[in-house]
Image (cartoon, rainbow, N blue to C red; front, side, top):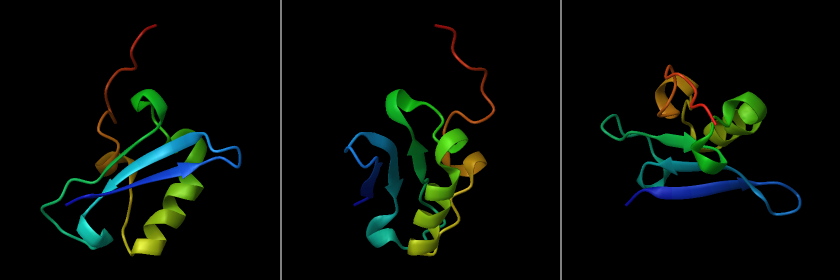
Length: 77
């Protein structure tokens, strides 16, 4: 079962949600997903925290592999 983690601000607001492999262990068949609120790109503001999360679990959490909308045109609102 995937492991879901949320990085939060000091006030408790969700900043980044990560879906990691079971037990946070490397699995080449598992697609790691990292998104911000409303599925926005969290790497722009929180790349340092995401890097630290990866270091904690021994995972490389690169934007091109983990952010599912990388390379797509931004939506117009």
